[in-house]
View 1: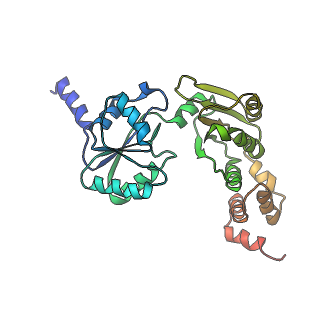
View 2: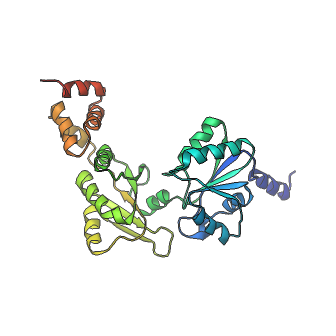
View 3: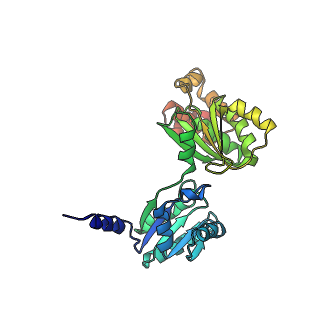
Length: 295
């Protein structure tokens, strides 16, 4: 019979840090007390840490009295530094990847590093923890059974409208990230393309000034006319209730008028053609030929 000591040893062995492994370590999104004991163990025992911003991660490590070599890994150096990390992992070192807050590889350049590891045959494991998307969804009071995460919308108007039109008739709850200085413009775009829906605006999650505003998109627009947005936001938007609307609106339109509808909504011509093909369940080259015909 195994003793409890054997069971504890088995648990400890399962969490042993091994060489050649990339550890995706979730870090707090505001409240430092949210870090897990397993995350602290990994950060303390890996050979080095790859961080989105070594200054921010340095503060986190200092708070928990951890000292480890760090390298920066972010959007604009991910190809070069990613290859360096892969080579070190292949040589037997262990690495913890962290983002500034939350779970790395979610709307984050860590996604590329995980892909590179997969292609190179390097093992990857995840140390679960904080994730703003899931936290906001749970607090939203909107349906949580089916949802989609869109991250940050593009600053390019055409790309923003194209993306919003793609999800316009999606019945799932949709989640976005947004910065305070772009919040009001984003709310205006959501109202124009998606129509007025329920929305939960989650601000400064887990921090002292955490605030959850449950309202409608139009209500949020009015609120922020009088109250300046502050802090980082997660927007949780109600899905479409117009399950058949996507069929109804174009049923009586010609294909050319159908394409023109999306172009008028801000889509580029080829994106509009792709969307019409998707709506009608046909190949995009069929739509392209009709749109560019003389008849």
